[in-house]
Image (cartoon, rainbow, N blue to C red; front, side, top):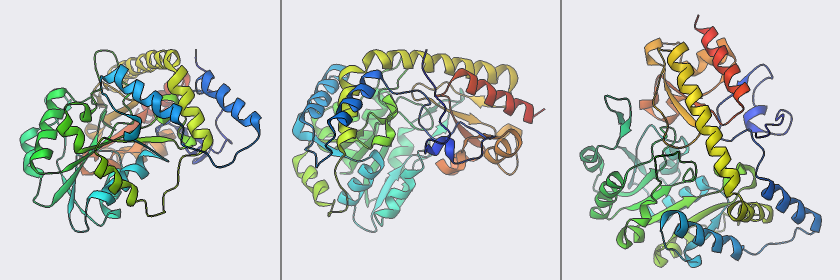
Length: 378
């Protein structure tokens, strides 16, 4: 159904970092070609032949406003939107805008590895509310623990929703609870919602800023078409801030060190949001099928590895602790199976004994990797 072209020797981080005998199921991009509408829009722009300085795309901002209203009943305006090169650079920018050196930022490990660098780069301390699995293996927010983790100098909370690597789509109750504590402590919520479009049937992404106006005034939201439409290499992300004074602080904090979004990135993003809906529906169906296939394979062939069904993303969080693989599950499967996965330890101390597997690939690649992993344990 989807083309998964050869990616070796194409300057791909995912496929080019290791030797050709290694199957890469690690970094979070998919192996499928982007939507035809995106490719066509890029070809038309390239055929024009002039690549001068670009204005920020008003069409793109209007599409984002319409999209937030249609999908999430969240009313924003084009003036609330800043275009930034990436979500990671965006949340680093906001951390440095709202947190003074020596103050603290709250994280919830296990979580996307660049989160851990943001406080360091802002010369801030890090406080933690570790997410813990319940009896069913699913991770949920303990709101009492969340409240206790906040210190007097905690000025910001870095939220990942949908969560990477856990695949959680946080409920309205969880979001209201976390937001309420942040408001009580006058904290800024920095919400990485980059996976908001990759949500499976039965779940609904809720932008935390959409809950009410007071929460919106204390929230900066970061989204992007990069994961959704497989255009991460084009560096176009979106920062949404409905608080004008906070937006001015963020702009000031750029200090001439962060540039704008490139012309082709805006072209691809606009085309994706304008015409990519049917492609995305098909991708989600394919990813859901891969998710079910992966879970069934693990249950029947790798029963000592435990996986909770992701509610969103194309990332699986695999608990390998029962196997006691040395020196780590990531290194074991890399050396013995020649499969590259993400090391759970990179997601914080609670990730010890876990790996993250990217199932945004062809079924053939997924099966090949799983068979290699299974054989390495026999």
